[in-house]
Length: 232
Image (cartoon, rainbow, N blue to C red; front, side, top):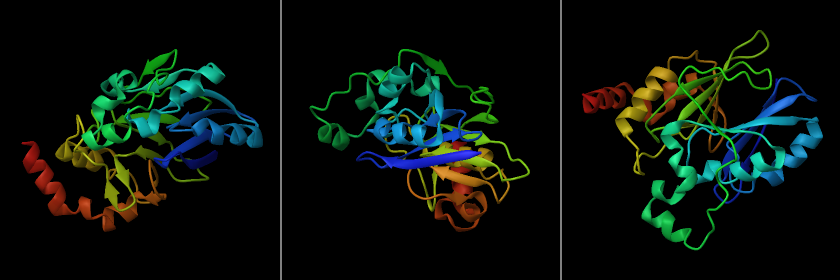
């Protein structure tokens, strides 16, 4: 399998390209601000043909390049319906501070010509990749994890967006965020995977489920128990 990635734009949100091998079809995950400038040379270097763009959630730092990418390559965008409104009104999901910082910046063109819905358990059959969608609400209502099945050559891979980072979890103080729900999603959909499962997060370095299970301060037994109590 071929996986390449880079932090895009001023938000430094990780954009990933997945393909079965060089010279094949590929999918793009989280094309953020200015991502197309980094994607074009990746496509050329590995002789890749993009067939779809998928986002882990609707926040602007992960979707700013979505419409541009989809229009240039005539491909669909995939997004969970819980976050689709952010394509038309991205500022509605941001803090007052971010809204002020982005005042005057054009938000036109975020929505691709074709937007297809993601659902829990969906296996979208794209580019020959063994992808499964896990819905993980908490950071946003429509947050998802992209799960790439294990094979004999490599462990399972999770692309977690802003739900789980190395040493941290996604913020939940923005519109639609719910900290207890986020921790429950992590417990049920991420910590349930094997320790050697690779985690490719939306910001920062790669990690593994085992490393986060033992060292992430947000995922201690006490923190998870408090989340359960808050959810009741």
